[in-house]
Image (cartoon, rainbow, N blue to C red; front, side, top):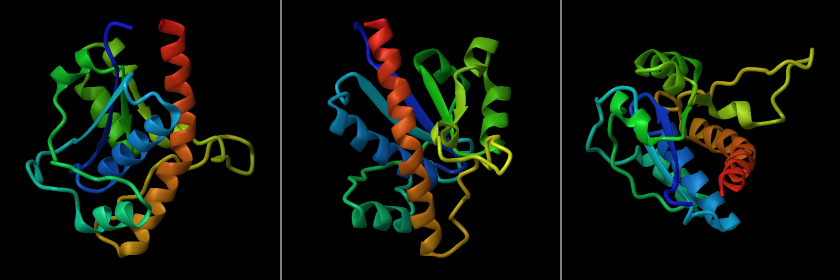
Length: 170
C-alpha cells in the first residue's frame, strides 16, 4: 500500500469525545498490528479550543484505562476531506455539519457516525438505536466514563471495517 489509510474523529471542540475516540482507536490499531497502515487524527467542528490540550477529565479517564493521550485541539477544515478516507462524527449534529462542509458528494460519503459501528445498538424493533455519543463537557466525570465505554464498543466494528478495506486495497 503506497499510503496510509486515514481516519479523523470529529466532535464539537476537539477536547472531549474526539480525543477519547482517537486514543482508543490508536490503541486498537496497535493491538491489531495495523498502526503502521492507518493514521488517526481528531478535530472539532469549531475552533474555540484550538491549541488547547484535551479536557482534563478526558485525559483522566483515558489514563485510568491505560490509554495514551497527547493531544492538541484543532478545527476541521473542508480541505482535509481530500486526504482522508473516513471522517467519523461523534453525533448527528457533527454528521450534518461535516456533510454540509464537504466539497463534493464523494467527500460527504466519507462521513459516518462512530456508533453506527457498534453492533449492539438496536432498538426494540431491531432498527439502530440512538447513535450519538453524548457530550460529557457540561456533566460530571461519569459522563466521560460513559463516553469511553461507547467509544470502546464502537471501535471494534470500526476496526473490522478499516481492516477489511485495507485488505481489499492491498
